Length: 355
Image (tube, rainbow, N blue to C red):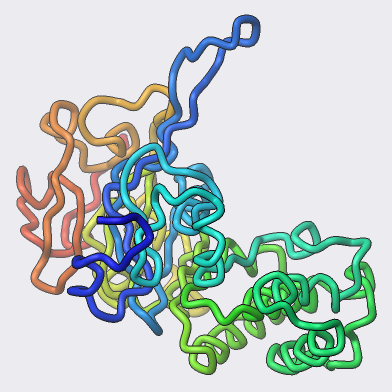
């Protein structure tokens, strides 16, 4: 089948904006003198997931888990080592740049630092309007009119188009970055930590704006964050990433209320609750031990060096995916061995004594 053409699998999925299959990214390490490859960092390892049209998939994990790399791979901003990327019904995995360019419109990204993603020497009209000139061959008058309309869409005044990025606050700049991403009417929007650098009130405004534009523009959204308290409020489904692997993925309510993996439970227990009574009475899972290095991954389960429920099998075998009755997919030996959770929440287990 010709690369870039619609695929039978994607057609069967019907309404899938993004499908990643077995996606892997290795970053080679080279010796400083001879530049020989001495090893590889497995930033993303055999990830398979899909995002439906008009769906929000939250991708969470600690810093260094590979979630930002996965977002860039999804849009072919960096090339995968292996695997398959299907964007808006087209396989873009191996397309050369000339053939990939028309598909760039289908997937757009907004970054954590909006100022660094904009050209400080260009006006907002030029920053937001550049994709319109490149993809739609608009005249300057047509471009400026459309940029003004886009600013209105993100709750900014169209009179601001001739100002420069340094004249705006962080929240305003993130709205401008969003306007630029929306300019080409994408199918998929990848938001990489879009609110982590903003204050709490501005975070709420940007999240509300993302929800509104998703409905207005009929978007699929891949929302990347390390903050589960943010992700749970915006996502339809949540995928949890640890050392390049997806360890749990399911409906937002299932993942946040009945986590199946100890890592997910630990992330959730670190999120403070607004109710002091509930905060004091909640069950905590505290991770001890050392985080494994992506340069030298342990045998068996990659989480076993910090897991409070570690068993002998965790040291010997890599866990296989287990699908629970509520549709959550989890990689953990607890569902096959030992306590045999068989799809039940890890919160049902007694918390081991760390001593």
